Image 1 (tube, rainbow, N blue to C red):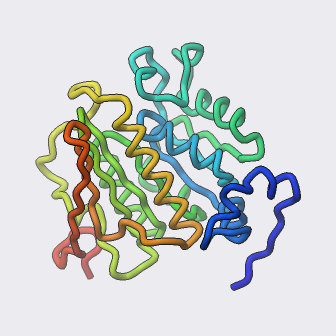
Image 2: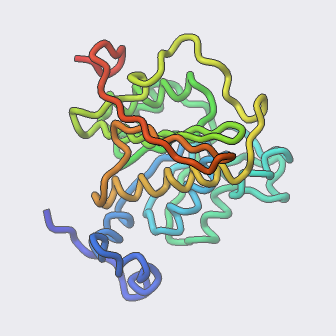
Length: 253
């Protein structure tokens, strides 16, 4: 279907380095301009995701986080600064993002969402970014995105390691997060209890932004049905392929 190009001359100049890319072009930039991405968790992962998506020209970002900025966050949560301490993470991030790109529409959700509220929120989203740090929230986001058929980019990082995958629920053959992990018996993986090297979340968050852009612009091959694992100490990547679990509690038919 042809895309209606509404970008003006100033915008075409601003995003010229992306527009000149093969397979991207003006159409890709317009897709970003028209897109709505929801980022859940505005911490170590959510910071680079939000900054790169705003800078790249995503038209609407919804930021979801009920936490406030703490001094210990600033080591890695680069969307915040020293003046943000004590303020809500979503309001702090919005200020930074509008300085990067004042044309991006930023919505802030400064509360913990119920399952029904989450389902309503993501109804018109092009993509959801899971940048949270606990399993119960990840499982909720996964099942909600599956029920709404919204693409999900999920990542995690702890200590010196990270991982990322894409669950493109617009496609019938896409596995889900629950195909990879059993909901019961998972250990706590929060940075506050295990530690994290700052650039690791930066790398994984940047990868999430990249995969979201590929989903929105329909370019390249995403990480659907692949888990990409990063070892920072060895500086190695490895890929694990997986399929839908026929007995999955979420996506099995």
